[in-house]
Structures are given as C-alpha cells and as structure tokens.
Length: 452
Image (cartoon, rainbow, N blue to C red; front, side):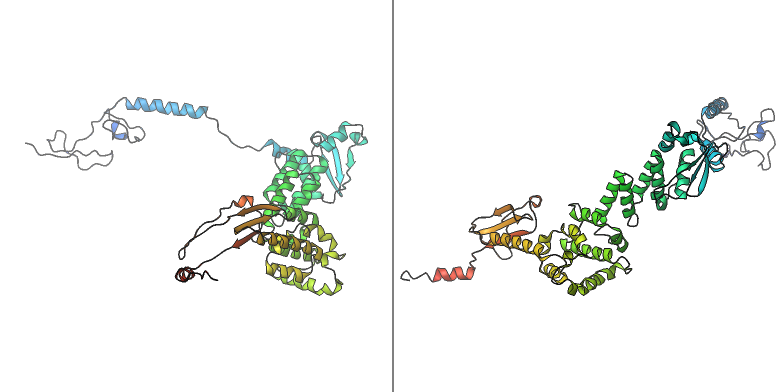
C-alpha cells in the first residue's frame, strides 16, 4: 500500500518548494487553477455549509451556487438600507428663531420697556401671552402703540425673570434654575404664560428640600399652585421632626406651624414631648431670628433665654404674655395628655413655665379621673381602659374572675387586643389573689379550727 499523507490547503502567495506536476502519491495537493485567476481568491472553508465569511472575491468550488446567494443577500441588505430613514439633527428652527428674532431683535414691530430694560419683540409671538393677547385685541390704547411701558407691581419679578419669560415665547424649551424659579413663576403669572407656569411648578416639585420648602410653599399659595403647596406640606409633615434645621425653624411661619402640629399625619419618631421641645426651639428662633448657633446648641440656648425672662412674667406663663400670645394657637395643638403621663416630661413642662396652668389643670383632672375609674372598678381580674382627650371612655375590656395555675417561668395570655381600636395611653388595673405553693401546703397540713 502507498504511504498516507495529509492534505494542507495553503493560501495563495505562501508556498514552499512545489513538486513537479505529476508527482506521485504523497505530494501536497494544490487547488486547480481556473484560467489563471484563481490564485487571487480565497479558499472555501465550508465542506457543506458556510460558517465563515469568505474574503472578498472568494469562490466556493464545492458549492458554485454560494456566490449567487450571497450577491442576492447583499442586494437585499442594500435595498433595506436605502429604505431605512436616518435621523440627523440639523440646526433647529426653534434655535434659529430664538437667536435671530428674540436675541437679535430682527424685524421687530414692538418694543417692551420694563425695569429699565428694553426688548425688541414681535406682536405675533407676544400674542401667545394672555396678557398681551388681551392688550392687542381689545380697545386698549396699547394695541396701536409701538413702544409699551410695563409696570411691574410684583417685587419678585426682575429683569432676568422677564428675559426668560419673553424668551419662552420664541422657543419650545426653557432652562429653569431652582434658585430662579420663584422669580420666573412670578413673571409667568403676570404675563399669563400657562406653559411656563406649569414648567415652574414641575421644577418646584422636583427640587423641594430643607432650603426651598418654605419659599416654595409661600409662592405656591401666592400664585395658585395648589399641587406644589400640597407637596411642600407633605414634605414638612415627614421631615419637620426627623430633619430639624435652624434655618428651617426661622422660616416656618406661625400659620404653617399650626397646620403641621395640628395634623394627624405629622411624623414623630419618639413621643409627644419631642413635639413640645421642637416648638420651644422654634418659638425661640421666631423671637430671636438673629441667633446663628448650631442645632446642638439650640436647646440649651432656648432654655437659658426663657429662664432669664421668668422673673418678668409676674406670675404668668410665657404664652400668657404679650410676647407669647401669637404662639398660643400653635401650642394649643399639643396633645398634653400624652406629655404629662411621663413624670420627667411633666416636670420639664412645669419648670419651663411656658404653658398656662389652666391648660395643664384640666388635663391633669381628666387623667386622674380616668385612672380612678380604671383602678376602683368593682370587677376583679384584669381591667383595661382607654379614653380620648376629653376623658370619654373609648374601650373597656376585662378578663373577669379567672383561676390560673402557673409553673415557674410559665406565661399565659389572658387578653388579646387590637391596637387599631385603642387610643394611648392605656390604663390597666389588675386585682390578684396570689397563693404560693408553700402557703397552700401549710393550709392543707393545718386546717382551720372550727371553734374560731
């Protein structure tokens, strides 16, 4: 048998010493030449299917129809590319209009003067504003004037805000900085630019924080943005107690604080006494807005300041004085029944002398009567009672008479409660008759003398 040899296909141009034509078995096989051109093409690597992309101009001798198929595929791909639209951003018409007509003032037919500045504008664009639309379409004298002097009654409006407001008429987008949003909103409301007003409202909602919330809340009320006002109030309810801030306390007005303290949605992490402490610090900063210490120093400075003024009260508490009367409506919303239930808190309230004694006396009376009703009931066993702020009984549960036999460290549930139906604090009275094992044993060994 002849010797076996492997066949190696080599790309054109990389040849070793070639055997003479007609060499016997064992010589390397060469791809047959076709018209002398085949040396410039690649080889086919696919015996039965195409898994590699052939080099340009390669011919497949084992599948002569492959070239035709690929040409058809390339034609389809080219056709698809020809029919696929491409989005290329050119210089937009809006930018051209803004630059040429607004900034450069070309072909202006009216001049607007305000706050010492002058704008060369166009009536057709100004009519997008409800303010100018009414001016130009009515019988106002300004409808035929080429120069109009605007009176700006709102102190929040400045030249920069007017620049943004007028510019918004010439473009489809506007950049609003949070630090400028109130001034721009004021200008937009004056000129009746509904789209710009809406954009200002969205900007305000997205940028509410400890530095902006009070200004946004006030401006939302002034310019009728109820959704922004509601959003600010929600932020304050969630963050007033958990993220206390000196500057925030200074900015919060009496009316806003009254809404917050009176709301059942105020988020309080600990106890009602924390609300009293926060109000005390807030009242101090309202009275002494020039104080610039840190939050850690605030409570100490507050206590010192009020303590020094006790001698000037002449037997009155601070809220009864002329200086303290404006804050009465806020402190009225404190739930004092939850504060005096703690001894340490009750002592602080008495020591501060801020809250009128008449407020506390009525609360003490209600709490005392509630405790007596819970303790001196004729029923035996465990009694639980819950009262509202006026002393009205809300919930009353009792276990009745029960005999319990407990081993060491044994626990037994005697009452299950639904916290959703209760109002804290809860008053619990327990009447127990306890008999220890030792006493019960002695009683068995030494029966009572029938003669006694």
